[in-house]
Amino acid sequence: MKNLGIKAALYINYFVFAILLNSVGIVIKQAIDNYNVSETSASILEAFKDLPIAFVSFFVASFLPKIGYKKSMLLALLIVFFGCVYMYYGNTFGSTKVLFLTIGVAFAFIKVSVYSMIGLLTKTKKEHSSFMSSIEGFFMVGIALAYFIFPAFFDASNPDAWLRVYLFLAGMIAVSFIILLFSKINIEAEVSNKSLSQDFLEMIKLMALPLVIFFILSAFLFVMVEQGIMTWLPTFNKNVLSLSDSLSVQMASILAISLAVGRLLAGVIVKRIPWLSIVTTCLVISMFIVVLVLPNILDSKAIEIKSVLDIPLIGFVFPIIGLFIAPIYPLISSTVLSALPKKMHSSMTGLIVIFSALGGTLGSRIIGYLFEHIGGRKAFFFMLIPMIILIITLFMLNKMTKKYEVAR
Image 1 (tube, rainbow, N blue to C red):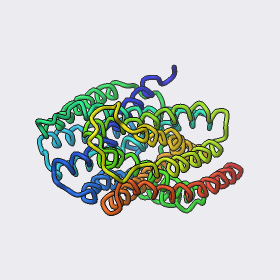
Image 2: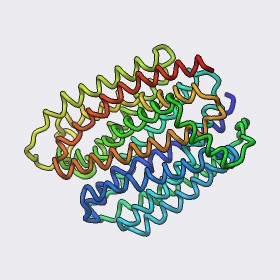
Image 3: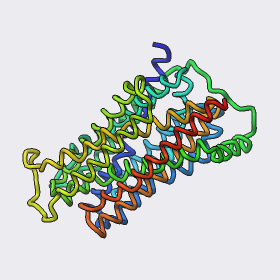
């Protein structure tokens, strides 16, 4: 298979960062338990992760092709390696902030590089959508694995035992670094002859396109929903369903597995069914899950559950929402990138990353606030609002995409 080595490197790097990025929900729960911080205070970790992603992407995306995608990804792995080592030895709430700061900075380089290279490695719109969905699906497999890696290091008799996971993760990062270092890239990015300031201005001008405006709004709303649920599901499992520490994290893996399956299936289905039909159907089903499932949660606090056999049905049913929200992000990202010339993919990816990060931060902060002030049972109902608005923006995005393709 052509470019097999670099494709494998993209999958592996994205997989490693899936574990790191989406451990934020687990670390929030650990911070609340071990560092005696409130839910609202703990939710700031999402900002320490997402805002650096947005900030760094804003300044590097337009000229990353000139740096080189391989060098950018190697630098990212090096940064996050030291972040994991610092977390192990720091063991404070402050060190968790530094950890997610390094993860955010590094992921900005990784995601812009990966998304831009997808455009270079594919030739057709359907091939682009399929590759995008499959690599995002593999990303979700990494997230699912995180829900089992972290609990494996939990020890009720030693509250600091969980920190050993970061030595394990540092080892994974080192392996990923070596694989990428020796991977050959047989393609070349289309590098602009313009100055860095001119490249940066070109990215800013992209935001004036109606196509990009509706995409930015769609991506922002979707990530608000996805990250809001994903980040707070472990805490929901513990505080509302009364699951033990290990079970509350492990049961959240159902969401990640559902997301992985949904995105992998989307990579196949989109070859036969229009993307808009897929995402609107998925959103309607997701809204029904929220409306029909959450009201069945009892307000009364149950005895702590330590066995999978004792978990109420909702603990298994609600996370399946991931199966239906999963296809949305890769499909809308692929749709807008496919509509633009490949030389604009790096800049457009920067905008994708920026507004996805901002949506994730806002979603997590809002849900964290609602968890603290109205309780976890009602907090997830908020997600119906961005879901409804998202359906409207997706129809507008589809309309703009068709106009832009005709204009080209």
